Image 1: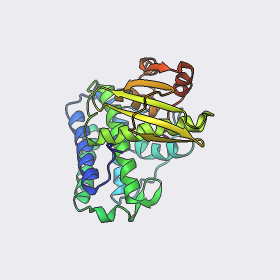
Image 2 (image 1 turned 180 degrees about the vertical axis):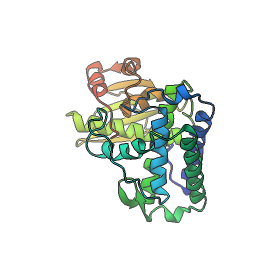
Image 3 (image 1 turned 60 degrees about the vertical axis):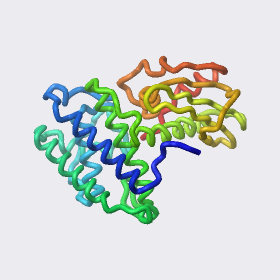
Length: 275
């Protein structure tokens, strides 16, 4: 399959540079009011997203997480991983914008410097990830997607769309297609052989066939002459839906559905697969 998934050290390094650099460029000219704009992540503003990126990347470069307790009763915090990720964000909420930006630039610089030495033969080695020790390839695969999705959160909040057709965007597109397929396989009792065509339009465009069998979904770029249903949407809409973002409630309404409309609507009822 010819796709945008990153598989080499140079690919991961380039995508990391792209998305961390894009976030840095977007936040540089923001005024104080823009930092407080809400994003599609419940309870998080633009400054909270930047704090979250810094918190996770700080951990990955080897810094100790802060010894901090989040306030009780935060409405947007669910038990589990959301509770854990809130710690680094809430710890930084009293910081000045200058301090927040300074940390972001410092941590991003160290992280990118570390990646400069990365070789392909190291990708299968064990490494510390957000969810514990795992293969370095898996950590980087998830991190590029997470960074890019948060870049998109900031872009939507401040009205600066873009970043869809670079290496981080194309990599994320493939994970989104797989996530949407996996979520449908998990939720719906689909007959083996059912096919869904994701027709992704605009920047970062692609067509991906999702074929279901044994309650699993396989995504490919194979030609699909007669899919059960075609879902036509741009990459921004796919990101909003796949990541379960709350800042674009009309996103589902923008999806064109052709073929089995009932099936298409069932899939679209809940395609969010990220934590």
